Image (tube, rainbow, N blue to C red; front, top):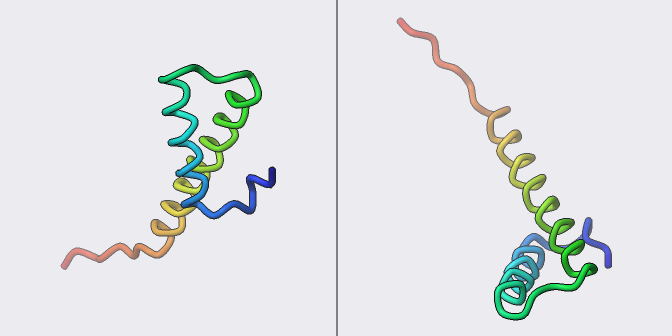
Length: 63
C-alpha cells in the first residue's frame, strides 16, 4: 500500500480501525507494522504542519 500518498483522513481512519481491532482481537505482525507506519506518517504530518505555522509567525517589537 502507498502510505505516503494516502489522504490524512484515510490515514486517521485506518489508524483507528487498527486500534479498535488491537483492543478487540489483537493484531498480526503485518498489521502491527502497518499501524506503526501510519502513526509515523500522522506524526510527521502534524510536525510538518506545525513547523509551517511557526514559520509564518512574526514577532512584535515591544515599544
